[in-house]
Image (cartoon, rainbow, N blue to C red; front, side):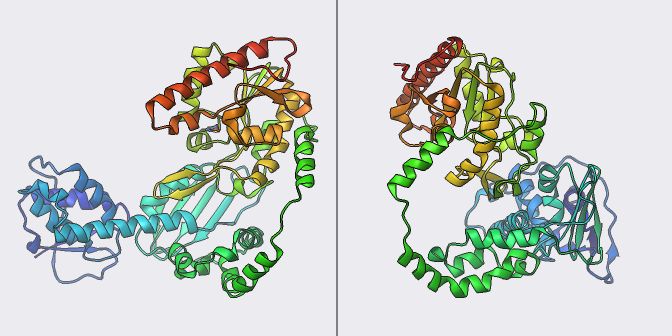
Length: 484
Ligand code: URA
């Protein structure tokens, strides 16, 4: 019996190379005993990994699955993978055989690991361990994953917290990110982490988003399993919230508050004229936006994305909020919607570099799903909080015209985010009495499946942008100009 011992750090690469060596030497699965280094030594021959002596081709789909399954906590994972790989040599079609039981087991393990990675991304709670004034702030979190997911998930945290030093400590492998360098260590003792000021905020935030009328205890526990609760400050509030939910839901029904129409009209009027009281300089504004914590969106976004462009532009273009790519690069409208905007703008003769481009909401709002961050439209309160910054940008640039792309921008600029399709192509009065030309958001066009509707939408979007060019070049523009 040959003993193959896999390291707990760099496991994926080690398993691949070892398996490749065994395949090349035609070593059958039953001749190998796979262990990881957490298993105490037994009486087997030590196996030295040796380089393959012939090229082995393995289906890409298997490699991708193996790269995930190696992080499963089942000690039999390496043996299962190799036994399947052994069978694949003569039957490559096995990778697509839905009836194959070995494959089904591996696929289920793969799914478990993905789920565990998802939980890790959602439930790691950092505490600040350094000085808030340090150039790179320092954070640490204690987390207890079900599988060995620290290493394969670490890059997510590197991207998200690139400008901080952080540690994710676990009972197995811990990740350390210091001055931009990522490293892993095994068996780091559990530290005594400080409770931090952010914990109260988490609890308050959780209490506020908790809707007793929509409580489904089972669904909630499957989404946020109990085993993670002990390391999540907000979980302390859950038992009480569940116990009080029926009474709070009944109270909500009894109270059923509605906003009297007169008050709504007053709020809208106030929104349409409200001017930000920001009184800093041009140079200070982007930094102030980046430091914003006015609403909860700053917690999960990578960074706030201030507007860019000439500070004396005749045209301010306002989109909705940063998307995935904008959140990572810190620049507005650079992802797929921005690329469509650039294309149509070029056709319409609108030079983007002459305009000041920004968003109604400065932080990316999303829900994590698997490896993706799925865009969520900002709600009215988030839009209202961020209006402070949009108004400050508009006040500094003092454009001739503002172009509102879609409902969120229209809401922020005119107090009304409804009926964009009937309002588009016309100007309305916005902040500081400036004309706001309403049009659709390019991501709405990207979502249109029907080719005719999409081409119709592109045509009127182009016309709206042409009108924006004309109006922003005029010395004064009235508030009813139309594109059609
Ligand atoms: N969508 C927007 O509304 N703004 C961006 O910056 C990117 C996508």
